[in-house]
Length: 113
Length: 114
Image (cartoon, rainbow over all chains, first blue to last red; front, side, top):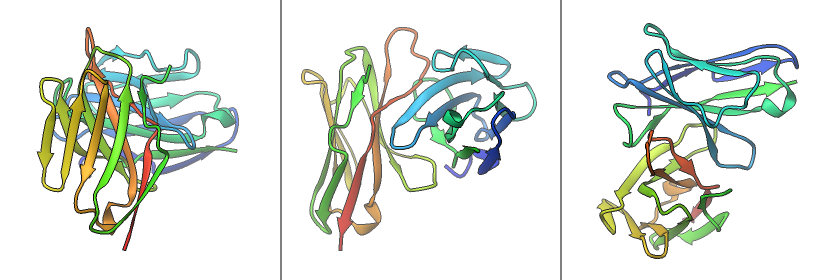
């Protein structure tokens, strides 16, 4: 999974600040998925994007969270006005097409203080 | 609404023996199943997958079995090695308009003792 690059690896934000998490998919992959892992839980799907399009955002919280995958550059997961409950590991995965195995990045660990 | 369940939070086996990790699902529309392995502070690593048209898939020491009637799959690791100690997640995808999003179980922590 070394091909999926996420940064930063660790991010500390104070309550009320914005968090931006970046994901560069593997070369040749145009499908990006974001997952969140809360402490002691499994990974939960958040959003699925293809270049310039949000395909499925059924797992995204209704407020404060947004995602994009521009034509050029990495996919961005943005969390506005962070709260302590947003503290989690956020993983990005990419795949060359739908319904195949996805390859994960190493994650961004967000801590809200 | 836990559609994929791993009921054993942990499993401990001796090196060289077989490890069997289990997973149950409730959504009969799932048609693709995967196992991932995860070390602390790292992302999940893909291990093996199986389509619903099969009941077994083997890759080296790893074999996944699928029982569609029971909505149950299992991962067999034989022989188990200390380096296999990690958290194992099963995941499923499928259904109408399948976007490839994965539904994960809660994970099983495997410890292989030397």
